Length: 154
Image 1 (spheres, rainbow, N blue to C red):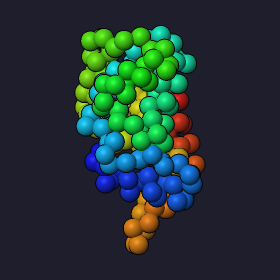
Image 2: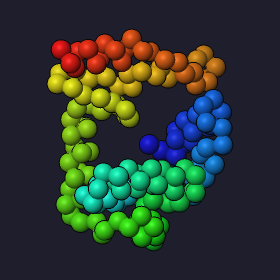
Image 3: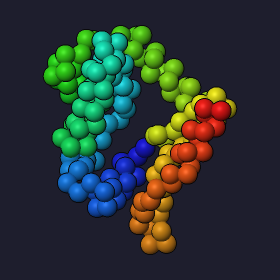
Image 4: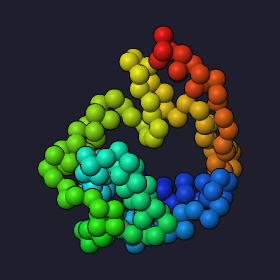
């Protein structure tokens, strides 16, 4: 995603859902790639599920709240040390590449996009749209999630 689109989404979310968040989102710190950062997440998950979640959320904070460039090797080294993540390996990079290829082959639209057998649902519960004034509108679609889960469990 390019910076302008990310900034637009962040501004809308901050204004309507999470005031005070996304304060560190800056164009000059927008990463040229997140592949190495994602490899660090894979390395953390190899250590434990808990560490993987901590690192994943920590990277989000580093980018969106601290204004850190996740493509900078120095930033990644500092974050790896902060969380006690072992060094990334070709196995971790391969896992990222494999996940990317699988997502593309499945037609993943974004997060969250759920798959269960032949069923799929992108963002099944919240309804996020833009009105005629280009403002973000948020709502709930509980029936959509119920239908997806029912189809999954059938």
